Image (cartoon, rainbow over all chains, first blue to last red; front, side, top):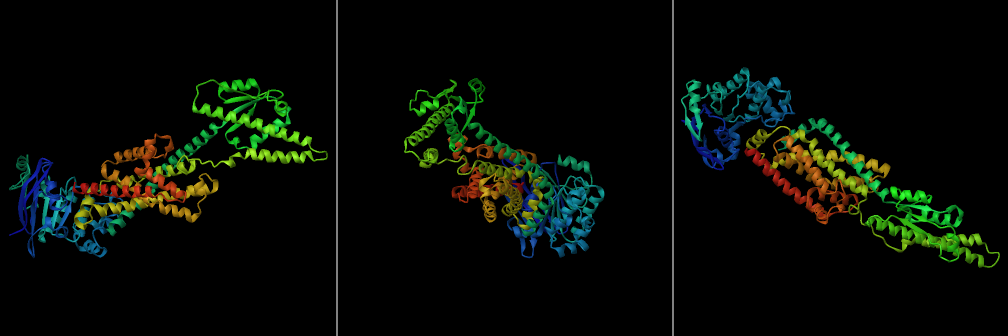
Length: 228
Length: 410
């Protein structure tokens, strides 16, 4: 029983068609991986789903208590139901992790999350007073995810979340995403990383603007052939 | 938005030492430019003084000495003319070397000739036969007037002596002579009282130092955009995107927050520079307009220039928004500051430009700012300049929002 459905998303830049009716569905607790070469439109698709870019056409449907709701036409619902982790870090470099978290969390809410919530799982308490500019790439990415998951949105969109991270950090982030899915949440991620695909129940290849399902069996070479 | 603004403030305060350091360098640079401009201006003024050689046996006739003394000390010509006693050889070589513009040759027996109303020993005026320019024409006019004045003063002295010597015996000749001399000479020397001379200021009604000071202050504010670069070093696109997506803080509110922080920092810089300049002027009288302002009036001026600070902030913000590379932004801010500053009279009096350029400042942000601040210093209000500033503010704010929205959309 699908919980969310991306339906016929079209987008073009000038004359270049980037997305040609991208569609897929996923049930609750499933992670969806989108793979494709650079410039294939993965980030565009995710930013459309995050409400940052407008689609020329298409819907992002989610099953709610009121039935199916198109999140692309309901900004308030979208902001409360979807968390987005962009490729860059949405952080203020001069401020500490705590200050950055306070942009998205109330003080109480942050303390609770640090004790036994997502911020605890991500291990952010270890560097709470460190300024962003003094953090490693892994710390920044964990903090970015921590900021994005404030208010506990059920759908997480991650744009190459584990790119250029060391193994322990990658492991920590992936374990958090697994827990998120186990709790019934959804994860949609774009990636070039085979480790990230290991948590995905569905994998799609985005090529020439068309999204096609791919039965990923752990064979990287075959996947490489499929995306090229 | 309150939380975002609070954190933006916190961030700006963390960067304050860096900003202050760059500001200090800019302040020294701007101060040096200002000092150089004032020095040049004063240099120009001293060079405008006409230097005239005075050849003849002046010591032989006390009346002639008295006349020259009166001209050199009591007459307003002392501001434009400098009389230098010298021999004829020195005067000739002085003309050739440019040390003097011309010289008078006062012939022997000149005083006696004037006293006898003979007019047969005229003062000879010697100048070069170089290229005729407005400058040389002016010098000739001044010298001609001076020659007439010299003769008139001498005539008055001698006329007085003759009248008094013909009067009845026992009369106190010295006292009457002095009185007449004073009355006649006084009336002659204060001839400018019969005229109402209006001088059009080189920068509207501002003094030269006031005009330069205003220009340099605005130039400093413009260049201060460089010191605020640390605020924009990192591309904050992901943060802006997330703010819009998760908190609904879109382009308008994001730019408003940035503008508040940017303007406040710029205002702090302006306040510091303004306060230092004010206290220096209060002690030295360097800028008359500032010297004449009381403390509360100076504070009022600072409040009145808030629109200028906002406009300059927006000018800098649009550059940082529109250009992704910080180096590119810095170069553009520098170039734009110098370009707009130059054509607004920051570095060079606007009256020296062709007429078409003299009309432009009101319609461009920097020029309107200078006009507006200048009038504030004069305790006046320049409504057209304020309107121009507000229109520019609205336009630039709109552009900043568009640029930010475009950036958010990626």
